Length: 181
Image 1 (tube, helix red, strand yellow):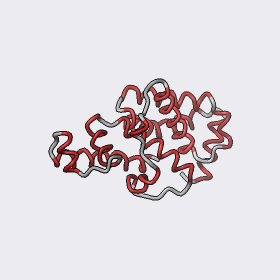
Image 2 (spheres, rainbow, N blue to C red; image 1 turned 180 degrees about the vertical axis):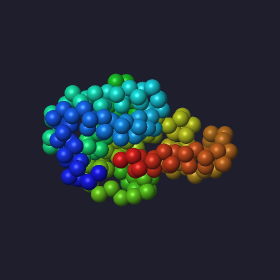
Image 3 (cartoon, rainbow, N blue to C red; image 1 turned 135 degrees about the vertical axis):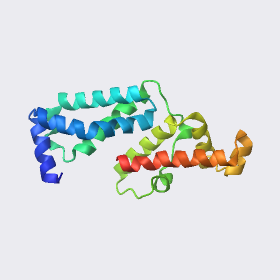
Image 4 (cartoon, rainbow, N blue to C red; image 1 turned 90 degrees about the vertical axis):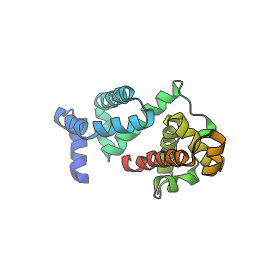
């Protein structure tokens, strides 16, 4: 879909078009659910967030007139819904936070705008917080504490191959953020 067509669809949605709403829902709901599930590790909760997000869009459809990119708008709402989830008691400890200088390497690219950097940094931190405990521990020991794989293996009692596996999976999870945005 080109920019003019998307602008027309957004205009029609803001006017109450069910057809356009269905189009956007069918196109983006699977991505929203996958994105939320990658961060929350809970399929049922991810489905709930997806429904909540599209309900919000429909309820606030009249305010969409100035929106230039539906996908950007949609994922901003998704991110805020996930932030709200964590704000209700699912806290990310500060020592688990990914730092801005880590992002280009972790995501495999450059971030052009400061706003993009903040958004991706928040999502990366949510992703780390949602990782399985062992993967998160290995990742943080390597990235935050600067330990090499052998040191992590010795400290945790894991084999070096298992440490490599967890790091590979952690980096893969973080790189997948770039494809979802």
